[in-house]
Amino acid sequence: MEEAAARGEEYIEETPQQRKKSDFDSNKDDRRKSKVPKALYDPEVRKQLEELKQHRPYFMYSVTVLQILLMIGLLIVNFIKVGHFFDSLSNNIMFGPNRGTLIHMGARFVPCMKQMDMDRAKIFNITICPLGVKGSIINNDLCTLGDLCGMGGIEQGAKPNQWIRFIAPIFLHAGIIHIFINLVFQIRTGIQMERDFGTFRMMVIYMASGIFGFAFGADVTYNIPSVGCSGALYGLLACLLLDLIQNWKLIVNPWKEFMKMSFIIIFSLGFGLLKFVDNFAHVGGFITGIFTGLIFMPTIIFGKWDLRRKRFLKVISVPILIGIFIWVFSTFYKQESNTCKWCKYVTCVPFNHGCDGL
Image (cartoon, rainbow, N blue to C red):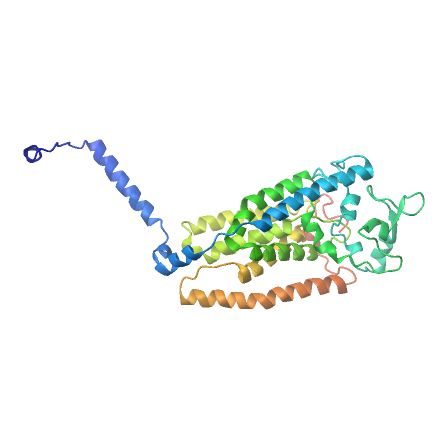
């Protein structure tokens, strides 16, 4: 203190509390530094991160707007056909149009998409018209398959082949609750993913997952109209999981993030076992998302071994992806009826008549 006074400086002695706070702040800074992943100290990794471009999410914005407009259109069509916007909650818990309107507007509905075996086909050749569909037999109360399907109809004696129903349902939703749940994830997560991945990559992953999701298990739930972008969103969810695993070295607490994501995936797939939910679309979209993600997602390389591993996975994913698409569509069109007795349990629980009709 005397030396400080001789130099004309003011000496301030730290109290024990101040020294303790100073030591705590110093330790806190050290802890923060220790949480920085080691990979970020690699100049090559930092260079790759700096070179990553941010893209404008044109695809996600366009798809979201289209889905909202089509939801409004579905409700308007339902009002024109039956006199009210929403079906009863006992028929549609998603607070949306009735079954007939969904089929007429392009839902995935197998009888409109392929020639079925005789036992199944006779059910739909002439049937009681659902609400929203005007028949051509006996005071418009009975429908031919062409009346039921709409979308240009099906000529008498012609084989149904409305393949567009693999694509159109991605942009349709069963109701207000359905579209709200999907768009919350799509807007919050999908838009940022497109900024990171780019429009072309995002479009391929989204559409491939959605289409495969509707083809996967379609022959099991052949008599249930299915709509929604859930399959496509599960493809994006698979990409998030893949991104976490491939960039494991960049994550501060990777195991914590992995456990959180695993819980979300398992819980949401479990939710898909409820009635009125097509869990086949979820599972199919997730499978496709893994392989399309391996092919199209941008990645960070952490050395020569990591480069070889990621290139190998990308190369083998191409024939696997092509193979599963060939398999699912050949199975759909060649198989006359579903021979898998346990497959229905992917989308239902055998409790309280939960699997009736499958």
